[in-house]
Length: 301
Image (cartoon, rainbow, N blue to C red; front, side, top):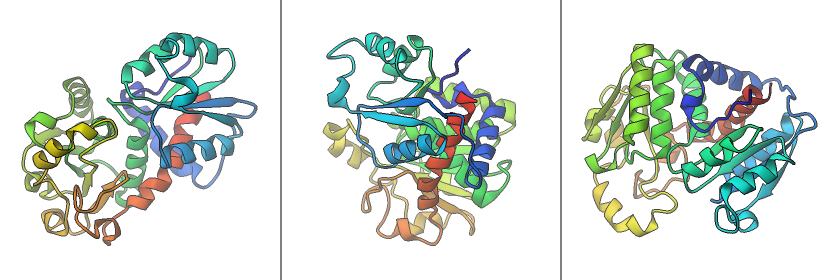
């Protein structure tokens, strides 16, 4: 039976941990489960890190790929998502899809016999979460007992990271205005995983409360792609949620700073945070390649 990766929860907690370990292993030695296979990259939204890392990774694993832009497919407009899925299913061995609506992924996966990987949707960004966990493991070792503080919008990145941390036994706390929390459906999954792993997931309102004693401080843009009309409202709502050296003082002395990028200095981070000695953002960026390779190995083994 084929397996998809639309959400972190599509992998069991033990599978999440296995993928993190495999990602680090693939940094040093490569396997080629995609030998002779072709993967379609179907992107409704543009990307630097996601596109380049998947194109390189697919080739490293022995396969080949083709890029399909929004203009090439016009998913759900030129023809129904299910028809696109059934056509591509006859030609390719897998789909990596970066879409506007998570439901498009669900529909696509239900009409295909080949694996579908979520390269970003409005609900989750699971590949980013796997790279984040790999980065945390590199810098902190074991996950048990770690406090991961997320400051800002409860967006797709926050949602996947919450489930990821809960899966591997790290405590996750998010600080944001009440109207901008992680969706209840994903939060419920994170709580279930946390209960099973002996960790915790917590919501607070004040950034200082989240950052207190943190091993990791993480943030993301306040205005994601597709939310441009909400910019003024969002900037006002998140005005007190900037990650700065002052906020990092609440965390542990050896705390690391994370951001999935692109980052906007003067908004969610203060000037210079990307280059702060505690910043590991470029390790995160590199690890998108290794973590996604590990996901593909798990799906194509």
